[in-house]
Length: 110
Image (cartoon, rainbow, N blue to C red; front, side):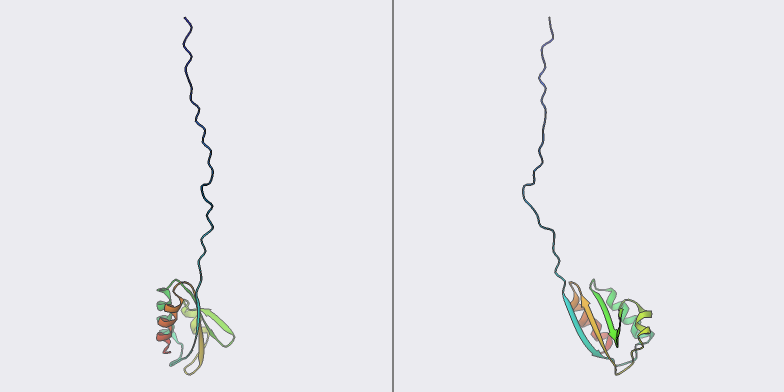
């Protein structure tokens, strides 16, 4: 007696997207503030500024004259040579830019 045929099931899966999704878009917030320094930007205030900036995700730069530096770098801040009575400009870009500017302005005395 011949063997009975066995049924085989073939599984085919077609992957089709059910919906198209757009890439996530993050809106960057930017803020700028000019501050007149109440003291020279030496080691202690530069360190306080860098530590404060580290608490935020926003990118922050400090400009004095024609130079701009990352606020998270103590040596770069000191290298600017900004002194008491001079005007510096903080520029923050990111989700917490406004909060970063407020906190950093307070450290600088503005």
